[in-house]
Structures are given as C-alpha cells and as structure tokens.
Image (cartoon, rainbow, N blue to C red; front, side):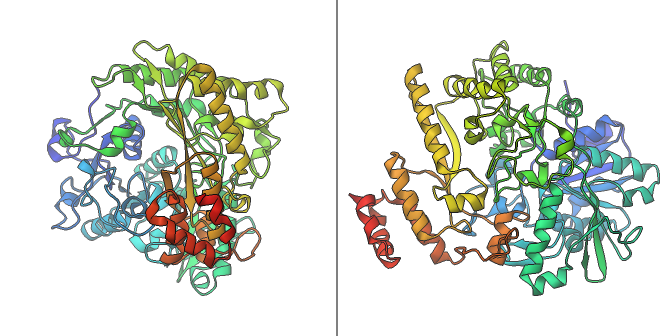
Length: 599
C-alpha cells in the first residue's frame, strides 16, 4: 500500500529521516493524486532518490512555526501557490469572494493568503536566508515577466522580484525540478544559469546578451508605455508556442530576469512513467472527515494527455502546458483505470477521461520538424493547420477499451471538447471518417446526461478575438447532438458556456447573443464575465486596449456598469431584468431587437 509523503516531523522520523533534501510548500491541501501538481512533483523527486516532504497550506499569520517545523532542507525549498493562480481561485470576475476555495478542506477561505507564492517565500527567506527557494506552479509560471494584475489593476514586475526567491521553474515542472535538484546536489551551480525552463535574476546576463536572445522592453518602460507592454506580450506568446524557442531577457530596475527556453515536450514513455508512480490517490489522513471540493470532482477521473493547440485568447493552458500534445499510452491509462476500480468508494462510473481539450488525444503535427519553430498560437483558427493530424481513431479505441475494464459501468467525458475539430473535413480519408465515429461514440456512450461545450459567444468578430470558431460550428454540432440522441433514444442535454465583457464585445453583441440562444431554446446557466488573468492575449487587450498582433485599438468593457449591462442579457428570461434590458436596447439605438427578445 503506497504511503503519503511526510508532512510532519513525526512522519519523517518514522521513515528514519533526520534531514530532508527538499521541502515543498503548497497553497493547496495535500492530495496524493496525479491531478495535483505538488503530489506529482513530490513523487517524481522521490522516484529519483530524494527525501521530500510536503507542508500544505502553512499558517502564515502566527510565529511561522509551520515554516520552521521540518528545519533546513539539504537542497532547497519549493514553493507553489497551488493548482490555480491564487487570485483567480479566491475572487470572481466582479472581485467578489468566491463561494468556496475548492482546494481547501471544507472549501474554507482561510487556508491560504493572497499571492501565497510571495508570502511563503518571504517567510522562508526571513527564517532561512541562505537556503535556495524555487518557485513553481501556475501562479509563478504566468507571472514570470512584467504582467497585468487585474485585482490590483496595475502592472507588476516579475514574481522573482516581488518574492525574493532564487529560481523559478515554469510550465509542467517534472523534468526541470529533478535536473535542478541534481545540479544543486552535485554543486553544479553554474549549470543552473543555463538550465532549460528556469528563470533567475542577475545584474549581468550570463554570456552577455546575444543576437539569439529575445529582449523585452524593460519593466519601467512598460509602466510608462502600454504599447511597449503589448509588444512584449507578442514576443512571449510566440516563444511559448515554439518547440525550439529562445532565451528571453527583461530588465527590471538594475537587474535582469533571464528566462531560459523550455525542454522539448515529454515523450509518451516519460509521461506514462509519471502517472505510474505510487500515488495513494487520496487526501492525506490529516483531512479525515473533511471535504476537499476539487478532489471530489476528480477522484475517479483520468488525465489522458497534456497540451492544447486550441490557443483560446483568454486561456492559460497553452501558456503553461504548451500547444504540443503529449498523449499517454493506452496501456498506461487502462492501468490507472484498474487502480480506480479498486478504490473503496468507486461505484463503476469514471467521471472523466480527458485533458485540457478532451478530444485532442493522439493528435498533433504530422511532421514534427515543421512544429519546431512554428509561432502560430493556435492550430485550429482561423483555419486548421494543414500539418495537423486530426485522426481520432486512437481516442475512440481508448474509450471502448476503457469500457471493457472489469468493474467499470460507464466512462464519461467531463473535459471540454473542440467540436470544430470534429467538424473539420480532413483531406486524409481515415482521419475524416474518424471524426464521425468519435462523435457518435461520444454522444451515445460517454455523456453523463449533460454535455458541456464552450462556444463562448455568437458574434464572429468577438469569436475571432477569442480565437474560437464561428458560432455556426456550434449550431451544426447541436444538430448532430440532437440527431444522435434521437436515434439512440436518449434525452441528454447540451450545455453551452458563454462569456460576457470579453475584449471586443459590445452591448449590441450581447443582445444578439440573447436572441440567437433564445431561438435555439437555451436559457443560459453556464456563464461568466471575462476574468483577466496574467499572460493571456485577452488580458493584454483588456489592460492596454490594443491588439498585440495588429496594434489596433479594441473596445473593452471595463467599468462595473458596462460589465453588468452586458451580463444582464444572459437573463432575458428573468422578468425582473426585462425593463432594464428594454431600456438598454433603446439607449444603444436598437429598439428593433425588443420584439425578437420579448415577443
């Protein structure tokens, strides 16, 4: 029976450890499951022979005893805010406290501070100033350059500058964390300056700034000139999409942040090895009797691939995981499913076989050499890349094999799907036929009653800024969904997600969205206002008012009134909203839309 990584001094003593090599601090509760980053990094380090402990959600408001209780590690402290940026986790787009913190026992909001990456690092540096602190996780990854912070409504410098940490690892951190630990353990300090997928601050750039480096406008220039910030973003995004990228350098004050290019994508064998580690798949016993909402959602789910080439403007997935798809082998996925069937609380239903986009498994560039220097942020819009292999045969086979695992009654797909990928007419006959086979397999056998998809909007101009397909793709998919349901005698629902107040969206666009979705018999429930998060195209447009790829101005709803006015159109069917919506349609000069919405 696998055991959890230690979290207390007594647990370390039971293992016979008198000093740890690495201590990981996390803003999340400790759940030893491969969907939780701290558990994965801890298990990977453990597999390479390191003595690792986890301190989840340390108390930062007392005498810092949680930061002292395991003493000084031999190599470094690792710090992560958790599975989400802490401010996105804590606040809604309206800057109101969310109903619960999904990664904290019982959903409490008292488990972590705002910006825990910064708070934890400062506590550790106060207590152990000579021990290296290494940042990881999505909060650090997406804040590694000058970035706009929506909650403070201002540009902030890189998070190394703000926290005082020594190193930062970005993206998916298994390989880089092991190599960093090896370098520190072996005293190869100079190697840390060239280690892929890391960032550090320095007064003199190692090797000097060369013609191969990408040099960003300094932080201070970005504060004074929004056009400098928006130009920086384009460089950062293009480099994040390349397999063979360049070193990126930005000056902040009298120092430079140096961000080394990433490792190549993992191989299938490397990804399989990570998921084959001895996770308990359970929350640590310290949480007995307490509910961890995020764990409840994923406890019986399996991640089948990494990466997303959708490139949605508002999404951070490709910025963190990259756009190259790395798929697990069928054997690895089935092995994990067999483990799930042995869990005491498993009733036969797998909640998800998915990933960032559920139906990208097994797809990707046909000629990988063409992907090496490709800067394109999305392989799907405005047109599907001709080098993209869209064959879904392997994914359909995986679903069918999963359903045959003894003890499994049904496998559901909870992750989002790209329905435009399903509708693409691939010149390869086999790939083209696989889209129809997969679509029918998905709808007839793998929907738990409701299939959630994300058209996001109905306006083509807004969708173009979002890097999403035309709404006609959704309408066609709905016809297919309804047809398969009818043929199979099913009564399943299609649940679309929509966003208001995205850059480029006007009140008129929202009124037309309400009319179109009403015509399709939807009363929308999966909706949200656009939330600016660091390192996305949409956020840069929100802050600067400029599209980095055209340098042209873009209207964005910024005030509370503008946002609320757009949001109210989602609720055209609510009698309490009717008079306000009618007044707004008259104000914007579109009274002609009133009969279409309220007849």
